[in-house]
Image (cartoon, rainbow, N blue to C red; front, side, top):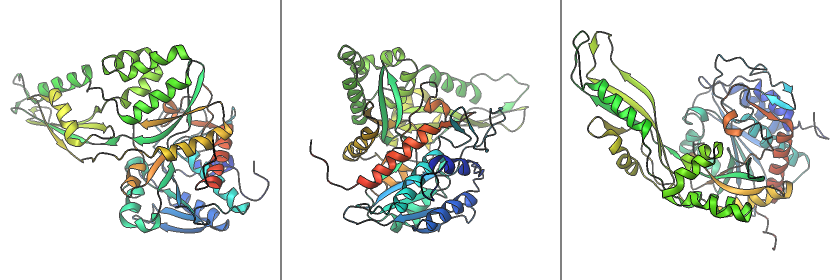
Length: 444
């Protein structure tokens, strides 16, 4: 399946990318990056690899434009999360096509997006397109483990390769949300910031044969029960307010005031419950979140530990600081534990909705029935690293997914897959982005 010409289509590219096992850990992204490097270099792009670890290089490529607008960055990661022992319908590193989909680990997160980007830029190069701006491609390693060898390393050691970039297209966004018979396309404009916390729980040590009441284990149990039964406060951030308003405007008139009740903190949780699966997806957009993920404590079965460490995966809303989070967490810990920040976070800048508006226009030229909506990602991406250079990243790998294939339930899951049609659609929209970024906004 190829276009007229020598460059492969997104489907062919994705099949080949999936066949590189880049499970992280350990990553081993080198062969996959070299494959992409060779393909882009053969198409006439300027390429270079930059590596903290020679086995895990990052690829920077550039399609030269007229340079009458700042460079535009396309960024994607080629590492994937490992597969577990669960059986797959098709081998996870085969890239098989079945039931109209390409199957395999990374099909959605995010080798599918990398294939769309590569196909779009290869087509532009083959057709001799001279975009208004340079198109900078960054295909990186190590996103799934925080970017130490990938985007973070690029930003900290070689910011020169990203000089002048104001906007970036990355993961996750452009997937459909269906609500009350209407279709919305969720374009990520902001993301929550990961803020790991170590809670130290202490108590008297002792022999395992001697009954212990109120020790470190009991205190840990109390903390875990509070985290399970209670919730952090509701916050209505500007980006989530805009998301709800966009959705409300796209719904039938009678449904609009109902959906807007999400913006009333006293009613938010009730409304989230009424929205079912959609409400569960939206809940972390309205509060800072904390989940207990790892417990370390005790070395021998017959010794009662005096100290236990509880790891919390905390995610901050835009505009909030680590200190804000610790203050909200204090009622859950009380006198049972002491919270220590493993890494702090600074407030995120307000998103650049002008870039969202541009991407929305590109999308609507190809899917006029979809209502573009700015979206806050409850997780995190490499975009947070680029933000330190003042780059506004939007998650935008447009996909036409059927109702039975939920984006967030499918990534990192068994039988990860993406429809062939969705790949072709995304590559077409991203080609439009390359052609029109930096051009004058059409009159309305």
